[in-house]
View (cartoon, rainbow, N blue to C red):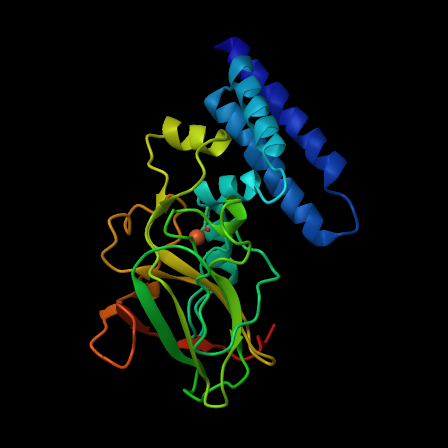
Length: 287
Ligand code: BEZ
Ligand code: FE
C-alpha cells in the first residue's frame, strides 16, 4: 500500500514535469490539447495500475496498427472509428444546424477522384443485386434549391467490398460524382447496398473480437454534398430496419439518416426500388 502511494506520488511529480516540458509553447491551443492528453494518458496508467505486459501489448497493438496502414488500407482510421472516436469528433464539430442534413463519419474507404456521371446515370459498373434509382434535391435551410451542388457518392459492392479493397472490381465501381440541375434535383442508378463487415484481418479485427463485438455495418451509402457558399456535409444514408442498425461496428448511425427504399411501382422505370431523398445544406458558418 505504502509502495503504491509512493509510486503515485512519484507519478504525480512526473506528470507535472512532463506537462511543463510540453505545454509552455507560444501556441495556446497546442498547450491546452497536449496538457489534457498527458493528464488523461497518465491518469489512465495510474487508475488501472498498468502492468508492464499490458503496456507491451498496447505498444505492439499500435505498432501493428501502423504497419497495417499500407496503400489504401487505413487501419488507424478504422481504429478511431471502432472506438467511437471518429463519431465523437464528428458530433463535436458538425452540430446539426437549423434543419441541415446531419453528418456521419467518412470511414477509411473514401477516395477523392471519383468519376463524374451525368444525372440519371449509373455508378454500378459491375455486380449483381437489386437495382435502385436514387433521386432528390439539394436545398438550403429555407427550402430553396441549390443548383450545381456536387454529390460525391460511394458504397460497397454486393460482394461486401469497396472497389478500393477488391482488385476484381473495376476501380471506379460504386463511386461517382454528379451535380444538381438548376432546380436542385439529382438522380442516379445503383445497386441497393447491403450490410458488410469492416476489415477483421488486422489489429482492429482482434480488438472487436476481444470486446465480443461483431464487425458489421448496417447497409448505407456515403455522400459528400457540397456547393459554393454552403457548408459541405459528409454523411451516410442508412437502410431503416437493417439487422445491424442498432449495433453499427463504428457507431455511425443517426436517426435523421435512416431512409426507406420504396418498391418501384412505376413501369416506366426499369428498377426494383426507388429512394427519394433531399439533402439540406447550411449557409456559411459564422465562425
Ligand atoms: C465505411 O462505412 O466505409 C466505414 C466506416 C468506418 C469504418 C469502416 C468502414
Ligand atoms: Fe461504408
